[in-house]
Length: 474
Image 1: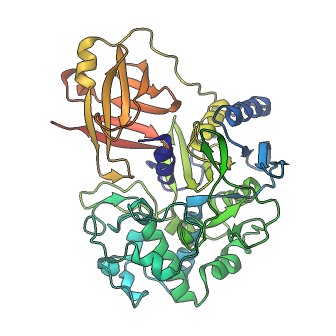
Image 2: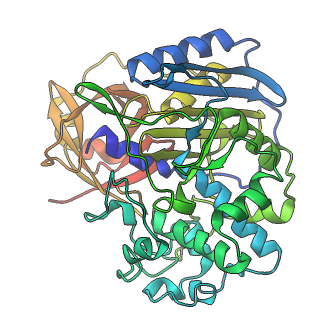
């Protein structure tokens, strides 16, 4: 699996912990003036990854700790990026779609427990009987349309809603709705269609009039290529010969799952209005933070608001990533410390990702450096115990298997399995049975207590979340 595939997985983030954003513990101490350290980090990441441009905003309460941009927003016009630069934000769009659905719930127009077919009368697929809430937390069982072999990746042509629905509507469900998790843009696509069906407006119109404008988000847009959007960045791919222009994607392809563009300032304003000040009210925010349990009682870590609430290095964190042709993004809010961090960039498939950049910024703020590398090497018996294939557990994110192989007296990871035709990425030992990936030290691999006996279950902390894998018996 390539770094590009890892970036695609950044649309899903692991979540654990409390579902309330109100601070309930004394705020942690944040360094007084970390702006210079953050600026140096952002500049280094932009050059090393490399990114054409990165924009970053870091705030504590109403205080702007750092807000800036480095690099070029438009390479052909040689336009420098600024905090006012507009980037496509990919799956961060899902959080706005969830607000729209939550508003319809509050107005009594949508019942989250009602079947999808209640609102989409012509829906013919097996998900017509799935409760609406399963579309919000990726438990509907719908396939992910943009991960299918026939998905027109990179196409510049326009699509209709019907054409997009046909990519996933009649496929069999992967599992009974509500019983498991598999990240699916198809589910969020249907949420946009439900918004249209119950409001009588297009998704674009509804979102502009009922979400973006009331929240004062004047620089957040439905990202039509034909639309004149001031300060819009161009998106780029990384090639062997440098950067190439990313496809100009018809917004009806990502639609309610990823069609918005915004600035770091507007995303900060969204975090402030919805999560700090609760301007939408308890009814809507409670829906956004709702976590539904699986049949076995385990809570699904992905909340209905397309938000991820987890504990990272001892700090509660509400977050989500975005990734779309030519762009990548990440937003995070630490409610107990009242700290918010937004990272937007105009390429993907590079490392560190915006998730990694955000976590490095958080390490500066919370004085939580990455632990030093362990001094001692692995023994041969440890290597033998760890080598093998590991299959993902109940939280599917498009990465179903990783392979651990022996390499240069240590171990390395091969995404897709030990026999996958991909390069093996060396793993660097941090401490007893915990490693980070050589290409991204925010990607952490932790083997279970049984590793030395060959029963080596694995958790991987990457793209902002923690995912469990079990060793196969091949």
